[in-house]
Image: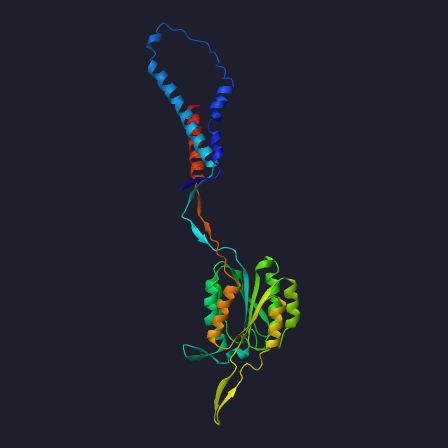
Length: 326
Protein backbone atom coordinates (compact mmCIF):
# COMPACT_ATOMS: atom_id res chain seq x y z
CA UNK A 1 0.00 0.00 0.00
CA UNK A 2 1.03 3.62 -0.52
CA UNK A 3 1.71 5.63 2.62
CA UNK A 4 2.36 9.37 2.97
CA UNK A 5 4.77 10.20 5.78
CA UNK A 6 3.73 13.87 6.03
CA UNK A 7 0.21 14.05 4.54
CA UNK A 8 -0.49 17.40 6.19
CA UNK A 9 1.76 19.04 3.59
CA UNK A 10 -1.07 18.58 1.08
CA UNK A 11 -2.41 21.81 2.59
CA UNK A 12 0.19 23.60 0.45
CA UNK A 13 -1.71 22.80 -2.77
CA UNK A 14 -3.92 25.97 -2.83
CA UNK A 15 -1.00 28.36 -2.17
CA UNK A 16 -0.67 29.45 -5.86
CA UNK A 17 -4.39 30.26 -5.95
CA UNK A 18 -4.12 32.27 -2.73
CA UNK A 19 -1.12 34.17 -4.07
CA UNK A 20 -2.99 34.96 -7.30
CA UNK A 21 -6.03 36.10 -5.33
CA UNK A 22 -4.24 38.18 -2.68
CA UNK A 23 -1.50 39.87 -4.72
CA UNK A 24 -2.43 42.60 -7.23
CA UNK A 25 -2.40 41.64 -10.88
CA UNK A 26 0.50 42.78 -13.02
CA UNK A 27 -0.18 46.09 -14.75
CA UNK A 28 -0.68 45.82 -18.50
CA UNK A 29 1.73 47.99 -20.45
CA UNK A 30 -0.11 50.18 -22.92
CA UNK A 31 1.53 50.51 -26.31
CA UNK A 32 0.78 52.78 -29.24
CA UNK A 33 -1.79 51.41 -31.62
CA UNK A 34 -1.39 51.40 -35.35
CA UNK A 35 -4.58 52.21 -37.19
CA UNK A 36 -4.87 50.86 -40.68
CA UNK A 37 -7.84 50.99 -43.02
CA UNK A 38 -7.58 47.28 -43.80
CA UNK A 39 -7.83 46.00 -40.16
CA UNK A 40 -10.35 43.38 -41.18
CA UNK A 41 -7.66 41.66 -43.21
CA UNK A 42 -5.88 40.63 -39.98
CA UNK A 43 -7.20 37.21 -39.00
CA UNK A 44 -8.55 36.66 -35.48
CA UNK A 45 -7.42 33.05 -35.71
CA UNK A 46 -3.77 33.82 -35.02
CA UNK A 47 -4.68 35.85 -31.92
CA UNK A 48 -6.73 32.97 -30.52
CA UNK A 49 -3.93 30.50 -31.25
CA UNK A 50 -1.43 32.67 -29.38
CA UNK A 51 -3.80 32.96 -26.43
CA UNK A 52 -4.31 29.18 -26.44
CA UNK A 53 -0.54 28.60 -26.45
CA UNK A 54 -0.13 30.92 -23.48
CA UNK A 55 -2.36 28.62 -21.39
CA UNK A 56 0.01 25.63 -21.71
CA UNK A 57 2.73 27.01 -19.38
CA UNK A 58 0.12 27.72 -16.72
CA UNK A 59 -1.29 24.20 -17.01
CA UNK A 60 2.17 22.61 -16.87
CA UNK A 61 3.12 24.81 -13.90
CA UNK A 62 -0.03 23.70 -12.05
CA UNK A 63 0.75 20.03 -12.65
CA UNK A 64 4.39 20.56 -11.63
CA UNK A 65 3.26 22.21 -8.40
CA UNK A 66 0.98 19.25 -7.60
CA UNK A 67 3.84 16.79 -8.15
CA UNK A 68 6.17 18.93 -6.03
CA UNK A 69 3.71 18.98 -3.11
CA UNK A 70 3.20 15.21 -3.42
CA UNK A 71 6.99 14.76 -3.25
CA UNK A 72 7.05 16.89 -0.09
CA UNK A 73 4.54 14.53 1.60
CA UNK A 74 7.17 11.77 1.19
CA UNK A 75 5.13 8.98 -0.41
CA UNK A 76 6.30 5.44 0.42
CA UNK A 77 5.37 1.93 -0.61
CA UNK A 78 4.80 -0.29 2.45
CA UNK A 79 5.57 -3.98 1.99
CA UNK A 80 4.13 -6.97 3.84
CA UNK A 81 4.79 -7.08 7.62
CA UNK A 82 7.92 -9.06 8.54
CA UNK A 83 8.36 -10.51 12.03
CA UNK A 84 11.43 -9.11 13.72
CA UNK A 85 13.53 -10.66 16.45
CA UNK A 86 12.88 -8.75 19.64
CA UNK A 87 15.66 -7.53 21.85
CA UNK A 88 15.85 -10.16 24.60
CA UNK A 89 19.03 -11.06 26.43
CA UNK A 90 22.68 -10.48 25.64
CA UNK A 91 23.88 -14.04 26.08
CA UNK A 92 27.56 -14.86 25.83
CA UNK A 93 28.83 -18.46 25.60
CA UNK A 94 32.38 -19.34 26.68
CA UNK A 95 33.58 -22.75 25.47
CA UNK A 96 36.74 -24.50 26.65
CA UNK A 97 39.07 -25.65 23.84
CA UNK A 98 41.90 -26.96 26.03
CA UNK A 99 43.58 -30.26 25.30
CA UNK A 100 41.47 -32.20 27.81
CA UNK A 101 38.36 -31.59 25.69
CA UNK A 102 39.55 -34.33 23.31
CA UNK A 103 38.75 -37.06 25.86
CA UNK A 104 36.12 -39.37 24.33
CA UNK A 105 33.83 -39.98 27.30
CA UNK A 106 30.56 -38.86 25.64
CA UNK A 107 28.25 -40.87 23.39
CA UNK A 108 26.04 -39.59 20.57
CA UNK A 109 23.81 -42.19 18.90
CA UNK A 110 25.78 -44.86 20.80
CA UNK A 111 29.06 -43.73 19.25
CA UNK A 112 31.89 -42.37 21.42
CA UNK A 113 32.80 -38.75 20.72
CA UNK A 114 35.07 -36.22 22.35
CA UNK A 115 33.73 -33.61 24.73
CA UNK A 116 33.92 -30.72 22.28
CA UNK A 117 31.92 -32.62 19.66
CA UNK A 118 29.21 -33.30 22.24
CA UNK A 119 29.18 -29.64 23.25
CA UNK A 120 28.77 -28.55 19.63
CA UNK A 121 26.01 -31.08 19.04
CA UNK A 122 23.94 -29.87 21.99
CA UNK A 123 24.85 -26.16 21.98
CA UNK A 124 23.84 -25.65 18.35
CA UNK A 125 20.29 -26.67 19.14
CA UNK A 126 20.29 -24.36 22.17
CA UNK A 127 21.55 -21.41 20.10
CA UNK A 128 18.96 -22.06 17.40
CA UNK A 129 16.16 -21.83 19.98
CA UNK A 130 17.26 -18.45 21.36
CA UNK A 131 15.16 -16.35 18.99
CA UNK A 132 15.23 -12.73 20.12
CA UNK A 133 18.52 -12.99 22.06
CA UNK A 134 21.84 -11.61 20.90
CA UNK A 135 24.39 -14.42 21.09
CA UNK A 136 28.16 -14.05 21.41
CA UNK A 137 30.88 -16.70 21.46
CA UNK A 138 34.14 -16.81 23.43
CA UNK A 139 36.67 -19.60 22.90
CA UNK A 140 39.33 -20.09 25.52
CA UNK A 141 42.32 -22.27 26.25
CA UNK A 142 45.63 -20.80 27.32
CA UNK A 143 44.13 -17.49 26.20
CA UNK A 144 40.57 -16.27 25.66
CA UNK A 145 39.38 -15.02 22.28
CA UNK A 146 36.16 -13.35 21.12
CA UNK A 147 35.07 -15.56 18.25
CA UNK A 148 31.70 -13.90 17.63
CA UNK A 149 30.48 -10.55 19.01
CA UNK A 150 26.90 -10.17 20.19
CA UNK A 151 24.61 -10.71 17.22
CA UNK A 152 21.10 -11.81 16.25
CA UNK A 153 22.68 -13.94 13.50
CA UNK A 154 22.43 -17.33 15.21
CA UNK A 155 23.49 -19.21 12.08
CA UNK A 156 26.86 -17.45 12.03
CA UNK A 157 27.45 -18.20 15.72
CA UNK A 158 26.65 -21.89 15.15
CA UNK A 159 28.99 -21.97 12.15
CA UNK A 160 31.84 -20.42 14.13
CA UNK A 161 31.29 -22.89 16.97
CA UNK A 162 31.33 -25.81 14.54
CA UNK A 163 34.65 -24.58 13.13
CA UNK A 164 36.28 -24.45 16.58
CA UNK A 165 39.01 -27.05 17.14
CA UNK A 166 40.69 -28.42 20.25
CA UNK A 167 43.94 -26.62 20.99
CA UNK A 168 43.00 -23.63 18.82
CA UNK A 169 43.38 -21.29 21.82
CA UNK A 170 46.14 -23.28 23.54
CA UNK A 171 46.36 -26.44 25.62
CA UNK A 172 45.76 -24.93 29.07
CA UNK A 173 42.62 -23.41 30.64
CA UNK A 174 42.22 -19.67 31.34
CA UNK A 175 38.80 -19.55 32.98
CA UNK A 176 39.38 -16.18 34.65
CA UNK A 177 40.41 -14.54 31.38
CA UNK A 178 37.28 -15.90 29.65
CA UNK A 179 35.08 -14.35 32.33
CA UNK A 180 37.02 -11.08 32.11
CA UNK A 181 36.52 -10.94 28.34
CA UNK A 182 32.79 -11.56 28.77
CA UNK A 183 32.60 -8.70 31.29
CA UNK A 184 34.31 -6.39 28.82
CA UNK A 185 31.93 -7.29 26.01
CA UNK A 186 28.76 -7.07 28.12
CA UNK A 187 29.38 -4.14 30.45
CA UNK A 188 27.76 -1.60 28.12
CA UNK A 189 24.61 -3.70 27.63
CA UNK A 190 21.37 -3.47 29.67
CA UNK A 191 21.93 -4.66 33.24
CA UNK A 192 18.99 -7.08 33.38
CA UNK A 193 20.01 -8.99 30.26
CA UNK A 194 23.67 -9.91 30.83
CA UNK A 195 24.18 -13.69 30.89
CA UNK A 196 27.31 -15.82 30.50
CA UNK A 197 27.26 -19.61 30.03
CA UNK A 198 30.74 -20.92 30.81
CA UNK A 199 31.53 -24.50 29.85
CA UNK A 200 34.76 -26.22 30.91
CA UNK A 201 36.10 -29.63 31.86
CA UNK A 202 39.06 -28.66 34.02
CA UNK A 203 40.60 -26.21 36.43
CA UNK A 204 42.15 -22.80 35.84
CA UNK A 205 45.75 -23.38 34.77
CA UNK A 206 46.53 -20.23 32.80
CA UNK A 207 45.58 -16.60 32.41
CA UNK A 208 46.24 -13.34 34.22
CA UNK A 209 43.05 -13.20 36.31
CA UNK A 210 41.93 -15.83 38.82
CA UNK A 211 38.42 -17.23 38.30
CA UNK A 212 37.14 -16.06 41.70
CA UNK A 213 38.48 -12.53 41.20
CA UNK A 214 36.87 -12.43 37.77
CA UNK A 215 33.62 -13.63 39.36
CA UNK A 216 33.76 -10.71 41.82
CA UNK A 217 34.12 -8.28 38.94
CA UNK A 218 31.24 -10.01 37.13
CA UNK A 219 29.01 -9.69 40.20
CA UNK A 220 29.84 -5.98 40.42
CA UNK A 221 28.81 -5.58 36.77
CA UNK A 222 25.56 -7.54 37.34
CA UNK A 223 26.71 -10.33 34.99
CA UNK A 224 24.99 -13.62 35.77
CA UNK A 225 27.16 -16.68 35.13
CA UNK A 226 25.94 -20.24 34.63
CA UNK A 227 28.83 -22.70 34.84
CA UNK A 228 28.76 -26.19 33.32
CA UNK A 229 31.29 -28.88 34.26
CA UNK A 230 31.74 -31.35 31.40
CA UNK A 231 33.02 -34.91 31.64
CA UNK A 232 32.01 -38.38 32.75
CA UNK A 233 32.65 -39.65 36.29
CA UNK A 234 34.05 -42.95 35.14
CA UNK A 235 35.43 -44.39 31.97
CA UNK A 236 36.63 -47.85 30.96
CA UNK A 237 40.20 -47.81 29.73
CA UNK A 238 41.47 -50.89 27.91
CA UNK A 239 45.14 -51.73 27.82
CA UNK A 240 47.47 -54.68 27.33
CA UNK A 241 46.91 -55.67 30.94
CA UNK A 242 43.10 -55.57 30.73
CA UNK A 243 40.38 -53.02 31.42
CA UNK A 244 40.16 -50.63 34.31
CA UNK A 245 37.92 -47.79 35.45
CA UNK A 246 39.27 -44.25 35.62
CA UNK A 247 37.79 -40.85 36.44
CA UNK A 248 38.35 -38.68 33.37
CA UNK A 249 37.04 -35.63 35.23
CA UNK A 250 39.54 -35.75 38.09
CA UNK A 251 40.92 -32.34 37.10
CA UNK A 252 37.52 -30.63 37.13
CA UNK A 253 37.49 -27.93 39.81
CA UNK A 254 33.84 -28.12 40.82
CA UNK A 255 34.29 -26.05 43.97
CA UNK A 256 35.48 -23.06 41.94
CA UNK A 257 32.70 -23.53 39.38
CA UNK A 258 30.09 -23.51 42.16
CA UNK A 259 31.53 -20.37 43.76
CA UNK A 260 31.62 -18.54 40.42
CA UNK A 261 27.97 -19.33 39.76
CA UNK A 262 26.71 -18.57 43.26
CA UNK A 263 28.57 -15.28 43.58
CA UNK A 264 26.98 -13.95 40.38
CA UNK A 265 23.43 -15.23 40.92
CA UNK A 266 23.75 -18.14 38.52
CA UNK A 267 23.90 -21.91 38.97
CA UNK A 268 26.39 -24.71 38.49
CA UNK A 269 25.50 -27.76 36.42
CA UNK A 270 27.26 -31.08 35.97
CA UNK A 271 27.12 -32.69 32.52
CA UNK A 272 28.31 -36.30 32.58
CA UNK A 273 26.72 -37.26 29.27
CA UNK A 274 25.26 -35.71 26.14
CA UNK A 275 21.73 -36.26 27.50
CA UNK A 276 22.57 -34.46 30.74
CA UNK A 277 24.14 -31.62 28.78
CA UNK A 278 21.00 -31.32 26.66
CA UNK A 279 18.81 -31.31 29.79
CA UNK A 280 20.96 -28.50 31.22
CA UNK A 281 20.38 -26.37 28.15
CA UNK A 282 16.65 -27.09 28.34
CA UNK A 283 16.71 -25.95 31.96
CA UNK A 284 18.59 -22.80 30.98
CA UNK A 285 15.75 -22.03 28.57
CA UNK A 286 13.42 -22.04 31.58
CA UNK A 287 15.76 -20.07 33.85
CA UNK A 288 16.37 -17.46 31.14
CA UNK A 289 13.10 -17.56 29.15
CA UNK A 290 12.96 -16.26 25.61
CA UNK A 291 11.02 -13.05 25.02
CA UNK A 292 7.47 -13.81 23.85
CA UNK A 293 6.43 -10.40 22.54
CA UNK A 294 6.58 -10.13 18.77
CA UNK A 295 7.54 -7.09 16.79
CA UNK A 296 6.84 -6.54 13.12
CA UNK A 297 8.65 -4.49 10.52
CA UNK A 298 7.19 -3.27 7.24
CA UNK A 299 9.81 -2.58 4.57
CA UNK A 300 9.47 0.89 3.08
CA UNK A 301 10.40 1.96 -0.44
CA UNK A 302 10.70 5.70 -0.99
CA UNK A 303 8.67 7.05 -3.93
CA UNK A 304 9.10 10.82 -3.52
CA UNK A 305 11.86 11.05 -6.12
CA UNK A 306 9.43 10.04 -8.88
CA UNK A 307 7.11 12.98 -8.13
CA UNK A 308 10.10 15.28 -7.68
CA UNK A 309 11.57 14.19 -11.03
CA UNK A 310 8.27 14.83 -12.82
CA UNK A 311 7.98 18.28 -11.23
CA UNK A 312 11.51 19.16 -12.35
CA UNK A 313 10.89 17.82 -15.86
CA UNK A 314 7.74 19.91 -16.26
CA UNK A 315 9.58 22.97 -14.94
CA UNK A 316 12.26 22.36 -17.54
CA UNK A 317 9.66 22.18 -20.32
CA UNK A 318 8.19 25.49 -19.18
CA UNK A 319 11.64 27.08 -19.21
CA UNK A 320 12.38 25.79 -22.71
CA UNK A 321 9.00 27.05 -23.94
CA UNK A 322 9.60 30.51 -22.51
CA UNK A 323 13.09 30.70 -24.04
CA UNK A 324 11.79 29.76 -27.50
CA UNK A 325 8.99 32.33 -27.25
CA UNK A 326 11.38 35.09 -26.29
